[in-house]
Length: 211
Image (cartoon, rainbow, N blue to C red; front, side, top):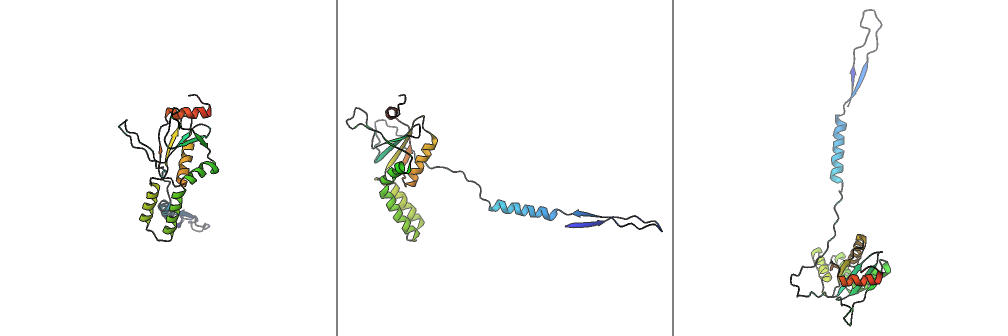
């Protein structure tokens, strides 16, 4: 609060001219400091701090027995390389000597290419999950039941299992873009693994790279 302090004026001599009393103001800053702390406390308590963003990845189990071959059911392997190029093949990899040797197909990150391919492959799951969404919004399913049913659909044996592999020329952005498309299309089984030399050789044949 403002406070007016009166100072002694001149003219104290007898018969002399009486001077006006000097006045000085002093502002009490205590209430303003209290208000500042109250506002600071309010903003701290009501603010939303940035949270670290993380991405959940599923990694394969390390099989210690080299004689055991783990067959990937409904597998689709994506091979990422330079210039935003993305190749893929379905099922197990088969060497050149095999009559059904693996041949790479190419997609792009356009909406009409990669997105459409994944949407077609996982249409049965997206249709079932959409039905669950409608039931959940209509309050016909409890939250825990809804989430469990969605997980079961994504983990179903007929659901595609995606293997993501990159060479040393691929970009981190392309990996994230691919994973984003997998999540958009509700594909729940995907892993990031190392690329085999035979797969790299096929990429080099397609891109004219050095083996």
